[in-house]
Image (cartoon, rainbow, N blue to C red; front, side, top):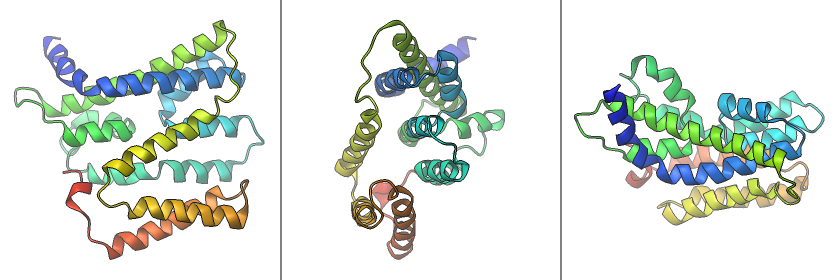
Length: 235
């Protein structure tokens, strides 16, 4: 038990920024779910089982409109396709994690990926357990924030008009953050230009999937023609 306490004590400081971000975003998600008529239990299950952040916000649209499984599948795959690349870059890191590996793969989100890329735990602490507790803590922050949001939405009369914009705001913040840090901004420009062109061609109701497809093709071509930058890689 003492070993696990020391592991949590080592992992926790690295997750404090995630605690702040996930708490507010999770609360907003919980309130939004409640405003759409879903109870706290559904909010908990979505955050605990799906744990997909932006895809969960998109899923609210799927749950409150005519069911279109093909559209839902493609949209979810496009939004979270980056996780495939995360997983590939972590094959070596997770190689000796044993029974913890399934959960580490499940819980690998943007923020956990960033922490695990940079964390350098002391040699006296088993690295695989630090990976596990970083993942577990981040997962817990999201679930707890969502449940708290669901409870607040049930107990307090909150005007949720405009709350749907939180997803757009989330993507804008992520984009600006990566724009400031990125050495190679070509992928971001590909995304902007492709989206604008598809918006003009297909209109605001049908441009997302075509633009995702164009971005995927353009990034694949760009990836094969451009050598990777050292600063963009996770060791």
